[in-house]
Length: 171
Image (cartoon, rainbow, N blue to C red):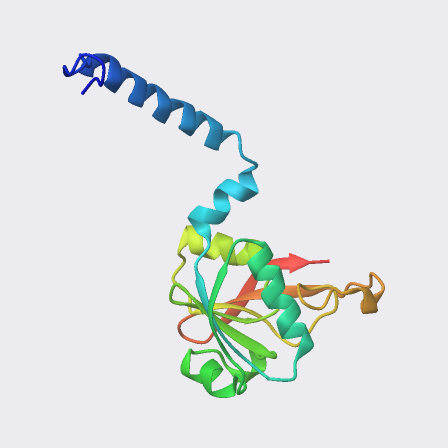
């Protein structure tokens, strides 16, 4: 209501809807200009539950790698990962210092975020991915104390039957 005249102002609903539509289009265009990594972060990443040793520093560094890549950590269990690894279907031969569960997939060890994003996007029929051991140069094992050294390592796809095959080779 107009304070001066006491009458209801005329609102052209057609113009108002056109303005709203224009704002939606402009917003969509602006979002499309974001760097692809930022745009993908909200689409591909999931919530992570992690089991690790309470004294492991490289686990903390891997968690930082994951959060830097848009993942959200929902829970961290600091009582070790042996039971979780077994319960989630990853054999000890593929073991490492931490185990993560993301959107129904298990990720064992220092698996790079880019491989996790690929699994979450493609949804293969596997139990998860594993990087056995603690290869230097993998995420979480790439700090300044390693002076740029990088081991050759494989990210393994672990089938629901326990069989493994190379998913991604890093050299």
